[in-house]
Length: 376
Image (cartoon, rainbow, N blue to C red; front, top):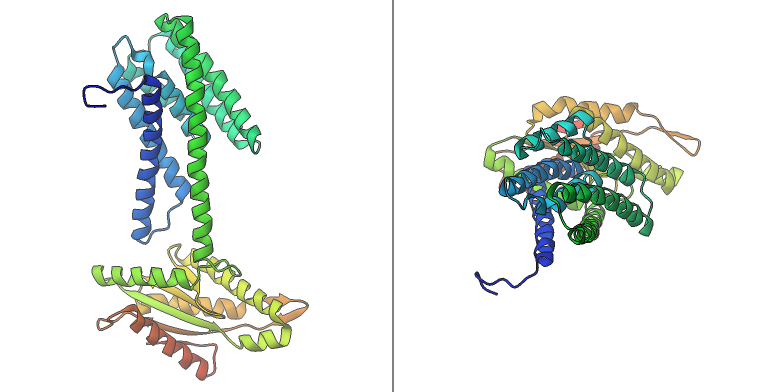
């Protein structure tokens, strides 16, 4: 195979084109998600994939349509339009209102120069039905092979209807229509298998990532996640000359809770404290994250906060734990926390310097009566 001789059938080139479009989309979304995480953001991955997907598919469809507009072969990319509609409706499950989708179709018809053709309005009706049918199938889909059957019946029904209109519009031979319908079914099946495998792999990776970065008992981030994110936050604060404040706290007399009420009650206290504070942090600032960094030790990173800016929030967190009700196995338990807080200083060479200072403040609180906050 050379530049001038490419001995590959159209079926193979169409398949490679389809897989290339999907792979490029997956690559772009992964890069965007990675870049957002690198900047310290916590993106909604499904929302990012959906938003990027709709923009990506619109650009692809417009580019394809401009390429073939005004030619006698403008029908050859009909399968790509079917594929694009199935992708955004079934796999991305976009929440698009009727008027928004209709507006998009009208814009497409305008670009295509077919808005005044009655046959184009028949296309529009079928595409609208296709979109909402695929969303319905996805939302109410069965499991296993039945999900594939539902998907196949819906896509085959609408792709057949669309190809019949294409055949009528361009006076295509019956065997060409049959072949294109079968090939449409083939492409949609490949897309189903390929996209599901990508999403399955992403879900597996997400599960592994969750297991690696989250504490099983409290469902907040663990020491491994803290170590990585603290390092990134420190480097970012140094580079951008931003403040960084670290809060360490222990649950007071936790060993006494375990020895007196049992380990199940101890687990309850850990979990309840973690969820109580995690909920509070979301109200304060969704960017704040709670980490379980030891048995009864937790940490909060106040990125872009000075110690004075964090002081009010730290006090509110300690008060919230003290005022909360802890009731387990008919026992009412009073819980408080001892806290150490420090801000990154100019002579700190690494994150260890900040951590040691916060840890010293924590132990000062514990040695001087507990249930108090020490700043430095």
